[in-house]
Length: 243
Image (cartoon, rainbow, N blue to C red):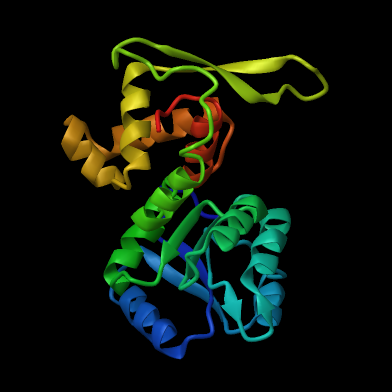
């Protein structure tokens, strides 16, 4: 079973064919006590084989593997390891790869432009319920829907609750559900779309990072999404965010 956030370490499976990236991340993991590399795979086939082992806490996947796409590994992990948090680490920043990864089950999407130590922080954030996403990717997703007409105007006051009509219907019913975001949740969501990390948001609104993660989890629950990218998409679809 995956380890809980309170466990002594976070177990990570890395699916990556770039030897330099492998070595840098392995060395960084070796220097910290709270993260452990459970398995290393250098191809799509090896990644799928790794999923036959007991689930890890975090699965870090490159998309451009020598024998196929890492998206296949993400999709399989979503089915075989439902409790495992999946994060993409890749050089592919195009819209098609981003959306395909999210649809397959990824909860985070990072471009390979971070130091190994920063990557460890993102692994911790993912394990704690966050959804790390590179600012460039967040902006790209926003730009995709910038010209889409809003379903309703954005809220005028941050302190008021925001009632929005969700686009997802309740299972087995034709009646759409309603989601309600508090003023603080709306503020956090707006900062997320601008690419701020949980720590940065915490400093901006003067609360703890733990409190920010709590807001993020509530936002995901109310919007019925699993990642920052999905939250941005749904918020745009529902007209919560202005262009």
